[in-house]
Image (cartoon, rainbow, N blue to C red; front, side):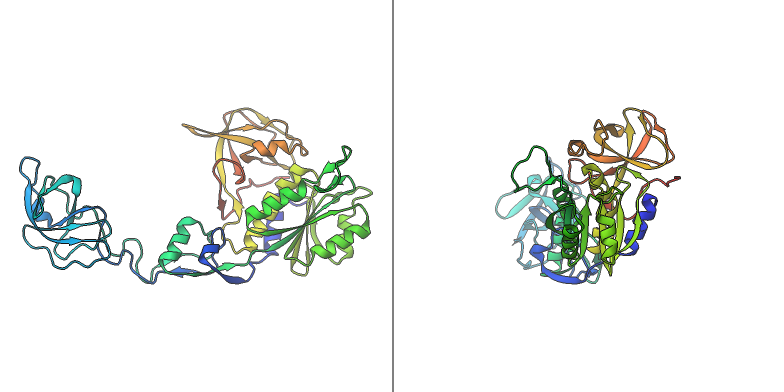
Length: 420
């Protein structure tokens, strides 16, 4: 039985980023940048006014007050996008708009609300500091500067920088297409006739949502019934994609056909079972270079295993530099106990307090209680060697990004070292 970190390491050693492709900048949001990006320009391209006001020489207004204003002659009216027509000399000023080029000779901009203009002259009522309200050439970008690194998630700000350096076509890694199969005669598909003795197939849809969240294109292949023939047919279809996820039937029951059928199809199963709760009957294998993930059937177990193992794998396949869910430290509002031997991922609600985050359990931690995941902001990580985490102690919480609260990814896993 592998530890969580051992299982994560094995999986990440056997998946690789997919090839890069160029997409229109409009389609790049949420994708992973495949190449470093450098600036092709200075931005701002000149010293620029940050406010509507007057471009002046500081020496001419350094003693200005409301009672004794500096009085300057207006020599130009500079709009954004229009070049100044003259330099500023002694006791002169130019009216200037936000984003306009600061004229030669000027070293300060005085805001319009601190002035009075009569049509030919302006009264300056404040001794603005030298350099006030001027955005300097290149303070945002310098030509040739490295501005974005490959492996980053493209958000709104990154997309803005790409536009600023005129990357109309953005190099990103291809999204992996991940096939998803649920197994079991007890399952009922969404379009099947209602049967109160059946269990709706929720796992396909939680896995679909988690795959989308991680950056993949999920493909739902439906339910494989509990026969080797039906399962084999579905698995063969799923192996045509960049990755395959199958949930249920992975344990050792008489009708649990997943592992033997995977082996019969020539899939090299690298491990089965992980020292964790919930979800220890998790398996991983390879069909050539295609990763195959076998999830437990209980819905919470399935979701937790997805977070710990499949999300990092998908993130790596998309070329992301940061693959693990972000963690925070939170103060426990209650005692949390468990038996030793396995890392336990417990669903918690987070609350921000003046002293930082606090965490409380969502309630029962049964692996079949999917409702608990709807309330969870994160997963409290209880180390394998611990029997109790006391109230008011500080614990690690792994964040979930499909609920309210903070989210994001980090480079390294923050799972405490297992001692099982």
